[in-house]
Image 1 (cartoon, protein in one colour):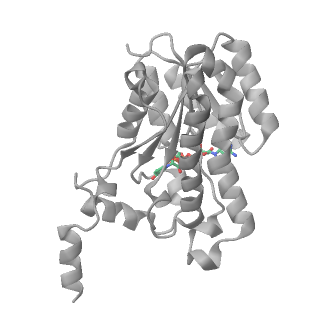
Image 2: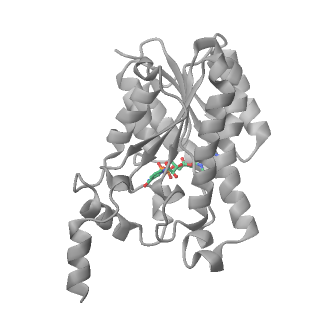
Image 3: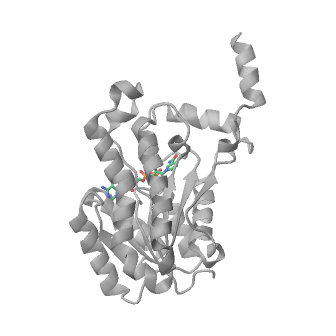
Amino acid sequence: MLLQGQRFVVTGIASKLSIAWAIAEALHREGASLILTYPNDKIKKRVDMAAEQFGAEMVLPCDVASDESIAACFAEVEAHWGDGINGVVHAIGFAPMDQLNGDFTEVTTREGSQIAHDISAYSFVALAKASRALLAKRHGSLLTLTYEGSISVLPNYNVMGMAKASLEASVRYLASSLGAEGIRVNAISAGPIRTLAASGIQSFRKMLDMNEKIAPLQRNITQMEVGNAALFLLSPWASGITGEILFVDAGFNTVGMSEKMLLANEQDG
Ligand code: NAD
């Protein structure tokens, strides 16, 4: 087992479909010990289910909108695993629904933008601050989840595209800031997967269909393909990798124009 004796804090489980669920499953499969977090009581029950399935040692509240909540969470982590942790998974994203539906210029508001950036981007830095000392003790790593909408325009992704661009920049700045302590920082840019967060994006189902048509592998990715890539980046096999955005998207990001797009254009007349 690749991760026997290693310890990870995993945020972002909201259902069995969550990317974080698959990451926790992959880490557990390789012998890792887990602490799982939840933002509020509504979600706790589902995180408890995951904890039971993956033998997690603790389930802790951690609302990343609150510095106090983050501090209290990592104080508990330190009380339990005082001699360090091997990794923290940040699988958190949120923007108000009205920001993800319609013309970008029209629907994007100051408040919506602040919330999206706070919860989806700054929170990664906040988790890095809170876990820094514990990660340094074991030369651990931080991992976050991003999406192609940070670098290309995708329908209705809107302000989340801005937030993900900020998140990706924070991966590079954190990697530079924490590298001297032996802490690595990486992201996975996942292709579209049907989850609760994704269901907030209008036209998501159509995007899944289009992805399948355009991607070189001619299909969408599975949750576990992200789980396995996360396992790699969090493991000693990736010890030389930091500040990296790894695409797990069936190759979608590599295509500028495909034969199928040309064909569809011809059929449109
Ligand atoms: P999900 O809905 O299962 O997970 C989103 C998580 O964010 C939930 O667990 C939710 O509780 C958590 N969250 C929201 N606000 C929070 C807060 N204030 N404090 C703590 N946690 C909070 O959906 P998912 O698709 O698994 O999303 C995980 C990550 O993957 C997100 O960053 C998302 O943007 C990213 N991602 C998703 C896709 C996709 O197509 N599903 C593709 C690329 C990247």
